[in-house]
Image 1 (cartoon, rainbow, N blue to C red):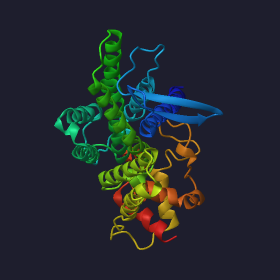
Image 2 (cartoon, rainbow, N blue to C red):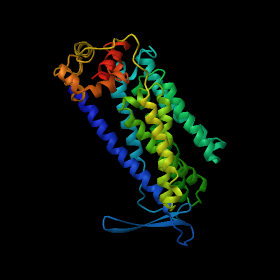
Image 3 (cartoon, rainbow, N blue to C red):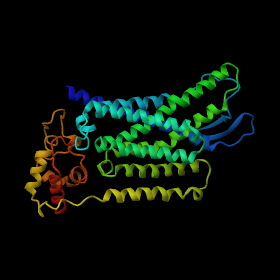
Image 4 (cartoon, one colour):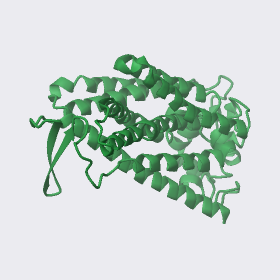
Length: 392
């Protein structure tokens, strides 16, 4: 019963995280587009307006330079999407990576630190990353977009490198996404909403709001907009061992940051009214980053020299049966599994042959399987499977 409840908890949290995240991303993309699309309308105190058509109706939105003279009612606040996404994401971190830390968070071959230390490092990295980022944004660098962006980029890449020293490849990759997602949610919680509240309080008190408050909130909102595609790449990438279990996974993180960031800038330039030809130079930059990532993941060390030239079907099946079939069987014997993960069953030689690609990705080109190497598969056994697959 406990296993069934765990599976449902995991499912519902993933569902909620995805659904609320879509709402947050949607509002982020819409409001940045609205800001970039504004056209002057000649009214005092109004920065600009934008006309839209959607769902059979026409809409007219305008943005004030600072704030209206009187506070309108009701006033809708866009904040719960960010809060809900972060809360469900942290709950998932607890349920998947802390609850099953031995299997999914830690890698004893990298650092035998124990579960409490691993969880502590995880929380320090996720929350401390925002503290460093926030400090940079509050420093004089806030007036210099280029250097600030470079330092934030280096912060994220450094985190990817450092986390990979102590966590499993998948956990390290996902923690980079969690760190960036925390930066984004904290921007809303610690800067954007408080600044908006100060503006509202000033209007209620009959005072002129400080324009710097809105400018700072707008800058953090723009940061979130540019970080959205990279954080999605980190989250999705945690399902692909060729990315997260690569020896230089930190470099793959860097390439994904550059590629997705360039593509988001391309979209923003179009929203700003630039012609396609004016923004098209960003597309080759995106493509180049992805091509380098593909080439990087394609290069792997050759099998060990002491592996026999020929590995028989029986030898390959014996390795899989002893190291993988405890989970990947019609009735798994590993505690906590009611069915074979992802429906992958490896209890016959015929299935082994059909699923050669999955075995190569998960257990030869990477160490993603078994999770945390709980069954103790050796490098020589991985190499033997690689030799067997190469000869098929």
